[in-house]
Length: 243
Image (cartoon, rainbow, N blue to C red; front, side):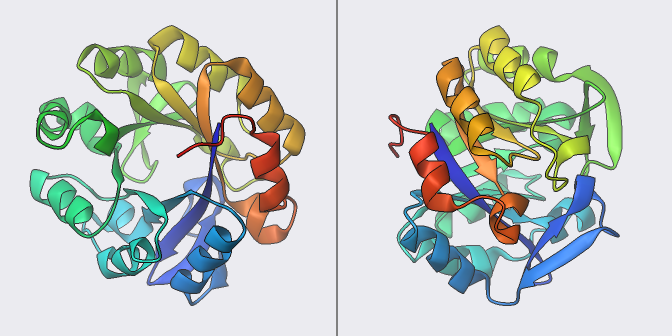
């Protein structure tokens, strides 16, 4: 299972939001490139970079920061505010190995299908962000009537391989991810599901890795507060820590 340290960008700074709320922000660094280098030096293969300004303002900013991070040599999964074919192409051209498409997956699934055709399934990840069992969009500010499983099955049928699952209520709260729902989503959709939202213990990582239906885990707040050591997290995710 792959461990993805999270680098959430807002105004060019590394921040974490509690439950996705802009008014519940903690700033951890004003130098995101240095933070990225720290995680790579600790053994990370992939980094999960989120453009929070894009997620909330519907504009793709922080692209230059992501490009600088990509030049460090790790592989970058990038999301936040990618709502057009040009946004997707621009992000991949700037160095992202994979883009995360959240809001557009439900608002404009044809754009996801076009991205698959143009860039390939390895370059596309669909964000299945859930609040009370329903998909949440626009930086988690809008809750739809569609379930994560239904959208995941729709995307899998179209050729999507990778999906990111976040239980919004747990993100940034250090209360643990929704392991049961994450594992079930992988089994019910056949997608390579990446767990997110509150991952905070080694036992949790080990459970996700042993499930056989979870391909990765994103860790944010637990790394920044020191609740989890990245080296220990990488070891807990073995023996399938390949790129």
